[in-house]
Image (tube, rainbow, N blue to C red; front, side):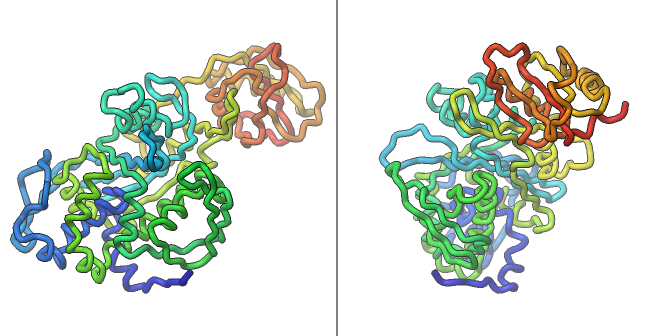
Length: 454
């Protein structure tokens, strides 16, 4: 594979346009279209008049700005815009419905000209409004299966709204075939691979394997390889994967917004638009897309924040059915949400929606030689409205590591206890006594600092 280094001048030239992709983000569909429509260098090549083939109407202001005499819609609202990007795991020759393999929350504040991108892991175990608890990527499936109003995209949007405490204005759903085709259409992308990827279990389209090997360093990817790079779970599962997806977005944008490339693909605008119609579902009208692009293109790179809901904001958990999932640590997710909204350090306008912890009987045991540790910790928990049924000394005072033993399935309460006690995820253990007296038993070890002073 040929190594490629990007010239510094080229990288600098595209900095003000990074949000074109990150906000409109139809995994290059809208990025290509927005680039073509907004860059005056190629505008004349695209339009003989002021319209685009099949351009639907929308709800933006009739005020327009003119570029070479052709009108463009203008976004007039100063409210923060939020868009949920859904990349669906649509397998060939299967009717669906499909899970969302990729979920990203995109924000743009037209007033401050700040923006953010938050990647959401598909294994996040959350309440799905009206449908119980489940992986967040199953919300789309359930919305399609049960004819939820608005279908899968609407239920996915409502689920993210509920769990992040932020209203979402729009959604964009894209399949991966479109991504592959369009990366090929723009001549591939250049990616710096930080570590060699060796994934012998990368899945093919027929539930078999298609081994993936990519060397570290600069690489040039075609559409198929770019998609594999974005989707492989090599490394730290969804967390590294989410960061690679953000890396791909920026690489695509660099390629799309190259002034040398745009004239070459300008003549293929009708083909691109047809691909958009066939592969993208969104509640954004085309004039809204163009108007948002007009705002996004003016956002400078220092005013764009990227974040991932990663291991610092989640807790590993195994469901009673044996599924490995991630329990959200709500305070950490609140921090990430406020970071991409640029409200960190101030009180956010919208409170984080907290899933109620399960009712559970809790016993606190002192596994150290520090006198009174169990009693003071029990009082601390009760002061946080976490009921404690009993406290006492453990069977010995030589526990090096604290333990939270779950005798019943209470993942939300368990995540809360980890957070307030400042314990690592490894402290969480599943109990083996079916008839245990308490739902949760906390054994305080030498690693436990103790409750804060009153």
